[in-house]
Amino acid sequence: MAGGCHYLGFIQNFGSNAIDLTTTEIYLNGLWYSLPILAILGAHEMGHYLTCRYYNVDTSLPYFLPAPIPLTGTLGAFIRIRQPIPTKQQLFDIGIAGPIAGFVIAIPVLLLGIGMSRATEIPIGAENLIELGEPLLFQFVIWLEWGALPPGYTINMHPMAFAAWFGLLATALNLFPIGQLDGGHISYTVLGRRSSALTLLMVFCLIGLSFVSSSWAIWTFITIGMLLAFGLHHPRTTDEDVPLDRNRIYLAIFALVMFILCFTPSPIQSM
Image (cartoon, rainbow, N blue to C red):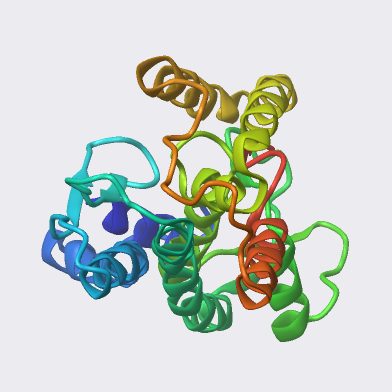
């Protein structure tokens, strides 16, 4: 259903085109969104799952969370890890495997989606249009495939392009160095107990972002709720004081680069 809505918006082209589609055609073309986003979310969680299996950590298969909410149609996906992760090496590998796997799938989806999108002149007097904040990687691919857009023009996103946008945003959200998010696992393995201070700093940053764009308010509320439920400090590993090896430090830097490429300070706003 969410994909069908995106397809309708795409072919309407900001209201300049009439619609002559059956319900079946709308739903079938909605797969342009739903299949890529399931692939990105599924790859992310399978990255966690397969790494858990490699280390013999008891875990569930991925759970997907469909939801009748605007734009996304989903609350994402997750796995349930049923036992403590004993070492920093294992925690780091499990934590970073998901974002990398999802990111690898999101890149070709982004390239294809932007290629199928349209550079369109914004209609005069257009109202109630939603503008999506574009992460750096998203902006680069638009420039790569469309060049510099003339004034008054924007990209009418194909449903696959929106799947890529949401996949990048989900990657950035998971890489926030907070609590038991993927980024929280990574920051704990790099910084140890000092990661608690970084978690607190990031919570204040999220509160500040909520004043920049109200679209951050829900994620800020969820994050604070998670910290109230599970605590500010990350659960300890048996080798907390043992530093990570050099290769994993490089991967942690790569995770920071992924976060910067996927982040946008204002995900959703009105034009």
